[in-house]
Length: 384
Ligand SMILES: Cc1ncc(C[n+]2csc(CCOP(=O)(O)OP(=O)(O)O)c2C)c(N)n1
Ligand SMILES: [Mg+2]
Figure 1: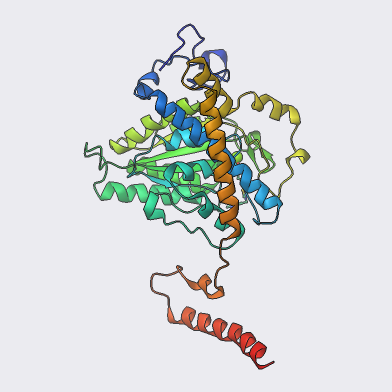
Figure 2 (figure 1 turned 45 degrees about the vertical axis):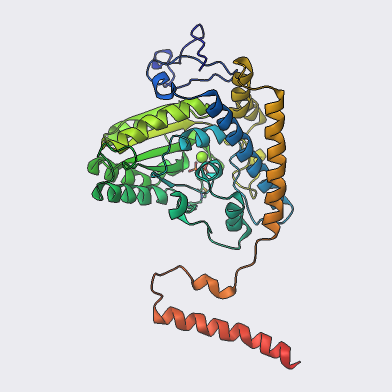
């Protein structure tokens, strides 16, 4: 990998800013880092091209979904525009046996875990409640309740620990858990409780906070007086801040944190410093509470442009490669639109499915009553 040793190194705490791990500048310069270079020194040009593909294709899933919502095909969509590098970098650090507990915005993580994008749309079209099988890709269901998944992740990690599935030294067996959440979620009691439980139990969990600067219309300064990553120290585990628009830096720091967890060294907090370029969801209008100048500032830090610049700079890809990825994105978008429109409406009584392992008799009786009621309309229709 080409490292520009002449370039300026990472910003440190000395200049008054909280330390920010960065390996790729917004201009696409690969800058050295004493600690984290070693964590990605095995990454090949082919893998960099793969990250670029992940970034572009996941952004395309996101923009198509916004369009589908605008055309009435989806009820809602939560765009991840701007957060692609945080998601791709962190999820490409995962191994097959690791487990992911997402929020509702982790579309690029879902992509990297191999969840079919059309399955993500079902939830937002209102035809299912998350149709992918969490056990298939170790990617759990989207969680709308802010912060709740950090508790699920911590509990799951304690289970991993009790199953003896970490700290064995076997790279195919040792597992870690990663919980994604936002800056706003750090104000939830659930998140603090997760930190405590994970810490005192030395649970193999990585807390990956995408600080996208906003919780709907509430800015970061309404959540905290200290940089979020510093919270970890008070709970007794390490925390750091990474450039969330730098896919390589996100990969490196997450690899380190996941390995700590797999090795039995306990939890970590990663604060990925990024920005929500779009609206909170398609029901939101951010022009009511934030300025365009802020957007302009972050547009210059675009996570995809810097990888592209780096690839061109170090001759890892030519024009034909970029065109091929664009063509692949076009094909995927077309398939996504077709599959979205073809998603079947659920049978009304399916609301009763998958609530209990063994559905209690009272619920079965209610389901039967509802089916009889709905059938009565069909009978009425037939007798006309
Ligand atoms: C427990 C709970 N309280 C409030 C809400 C309403 N709500 C939905 S998203 C959101 C903001 C979350 O912000 P953040 O954690 O920064 O994540 P982001 O949306 O920026 O990804 C809130 C308050 C909710 N879903 N759950
Ligand atoms: Mg946020």
